[in-house]
Length: 89
Image (cartoon, rainbow, N blue to C red):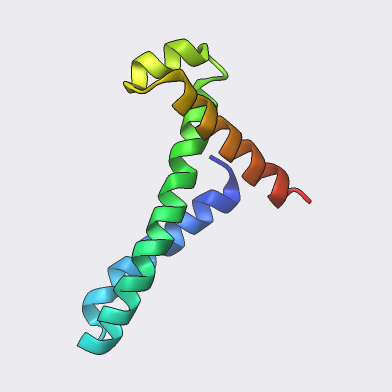
């Protein structure tokens, strides 16, 4: 996992851990925002893991290990590479 993604995971974790200390209104607002942020970050983590896996096994093998279709593996790898190229520009 790249350093930027590790930082995002750490920041998300920190913000989640802070929720119990917030007042109810702040906690509700923060939680809603964290849902979207969590989906984005965890999707990126998953895509990065699939891309890493495909460096060692074929897409067909990866799909079998993950219990998904090869097209799903391809989509995850494509999303990861697109994110990586966007971040490198």
